[in-house]
Image (cartoon, rainbow, N blue to C red; front, side, top):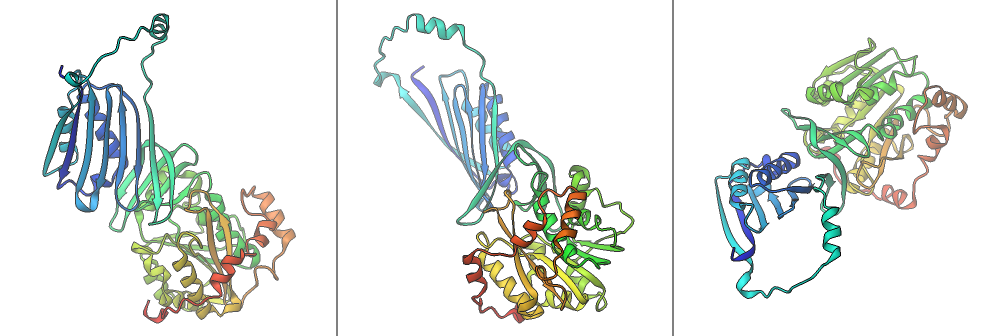
Length: 436
């Protein structure tokens, strides 16, 4: 042995883009590469950087394996460092090249701590060494794998148990479910958090009960999106509802929720529900005038298949499909995380429904970036969410159904906006919505 450690600096080129953006698969590959080399694994920590890139490290008793990926360039930089000569880092190199489907790789090996340049000191630990030896235990492997939802300035990371519960790439998007430590099962679409078992009540109770407890005569409801089932579950708590039509573009979201999110999807078999797997934009376009008392736009962020749900033309069609006195609610993004979309959508809705019929309200959802989320309440000359609100009736409803977020006080307080949001909504964005 001529050195204290072996250090291999690796570059993999032409890798699978999909693999290099897959945190659980990369972690599993790194762990397997360490095992094949004969290393003793102590811990692993991995992060995903939305939309692209993974960083992580596997700490081994003999040192570490580290990685950062650039999926958009099909490139990964890997750092393999082993102390002594009991572990062969080149075995890890070969394993990772195969796992990442790299077209080619390059590596430089460095000898770290060359012995001829070092002077060993004699250290007598005495009884301290004997005591430490008697308490020596095999290190317990710990995992720290993180899902990260971020834009260029803000990120939210949530630790999960490492292995995905569900993953399927549909014709529209990648649908995944992770088992998190703090929030239970968590549904994501294209690396964006949709909902989690622990805090989904805030979203679904507020997008549904605010309109339904303001307008108690709602009979026919249309839900656009909402494939996790939470909105339908809350709608069907209201016994006066006669029909619910839900149009979800992606069957895979429904499939995943039915199998792994039973507390959200429990109403999918209700006879009042007509579940349609189709494009919600096209469905609304083909729907007769004044067909629904309530329309709920339960969409994801304005990218991919949901992008059209933030257009002027779509909301004109929604307005047409509402009955006189009807109400529409929509998730309208975070005033902090996606300010442009938030302001633009509110401006668009005011042009269609008129300013006095459009009301912004808030809920706080920890698994959404910044925690602050907004909704739009819009009526077709219908009830006002504050002036026509029956606090006593709403309180009884919330108590009977054991609602976890919604109550009469929250209903009213949600419409009292922070000053910075009021200022944002008073400034026109200048966008020409006829071209959106």
